[in-house]
Image 1 (cartoon, rainbow, N blue to C red):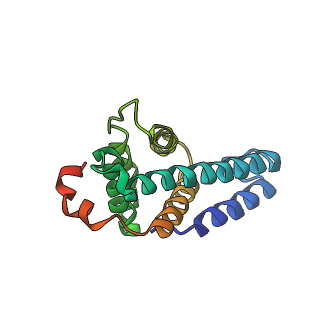
Image 2: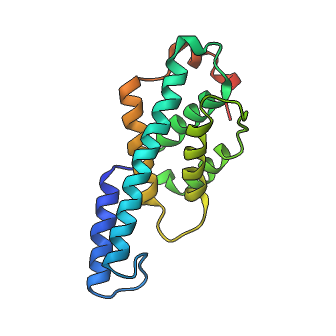
Length: 164
């Protein structure tokens, strides 16, 4: 749905807008663009760790019975990221539904959820171009998913109890 190339495409367009002094643009100059790229890189690293933690929790047999929250988050993301490109406008709305999922404060995956929650909140806050941030998160999510594989079948069979 949202290829990682969207970030590179956005960077290339932003470079042109800065060079040709075109408005509107997100970064006022090259230095601000470099800072933005560094922020995206840090976000991808942090999200990668957070998604890996959630996938690990869902796959870890010692965590059974699994708490429904991380499973609801992963199922919600699976659904949202499977949408076709023409359904993009509804992505922000659907991502915002994940913000309402309550997290027990004693959770072993609380730190991971806080990173993901911050990313979701950033995506759902109106700003000029949220797609690079979505692309970064999507890439981190798919990297974690490919490392761990799809959710275990026994969790998917009880999918209704984890729906959001």
